Image 1 (spheres, rainbow, N blue to C red):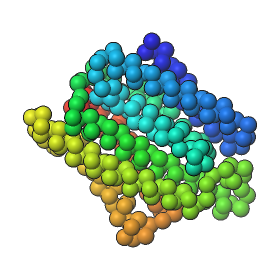
Image 2: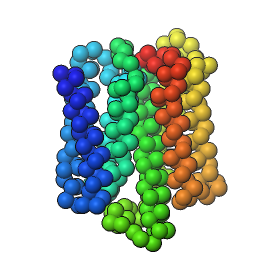
Image 3: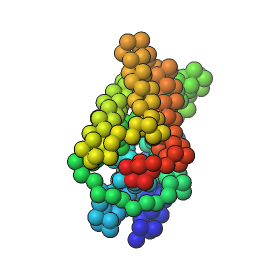
Image 4: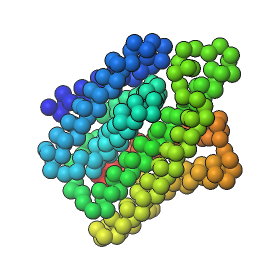
Length: 267
């Protein structure tokens, strides 16, 4: 059953990525794109429930399942708010990224057995996934901003230019997700430290994963200071949010693979 659900998730997200890009040029593809997104999301929901039942553990305590949980949250937030705030075109930029991250997690990250999680560890896992989902959405709005700006400067705008939200709105959404992501990531660091203390595992900040996590917190903290104190807006902040998300991906894939530790084995 697990293999079947993984195949359905992959098909749903890859199809959604293709169809959402197509709907930027042909609005008739919108329903199919949304349907594919819901199929991928629904299949992933069942997969996470299946893992929880099979292992009798919280289904996000290994790197493989945590990445899936993070993608599930990002896609779920998009599906929940896209219609209410008229943000459907965001799918054309979100689903290609989530599809690639999902496929990479299945191909690169080795499966491991989930562990029991409660208290601060659950808070740590959930807040980490929510913060990275917010950082991903900030990155997506940054990509959208750059693309619309480039279309405007070319003076030969295509159909998808009119589908994207105004530049000012995208800048506002980008800022909101940066704030939400940084606050949630702060909670991630605090809850991780409290879990280590209460579980008597000791603080392990010398490990590469924890050091990189602290670096991520500093990078996004700088972006917030730059936006609020230095009045970074528009193009500069959009590019910075895209570069900053590479730090997140580096932590999830690069550091976890090169420097295996507690997070790689299951937090």
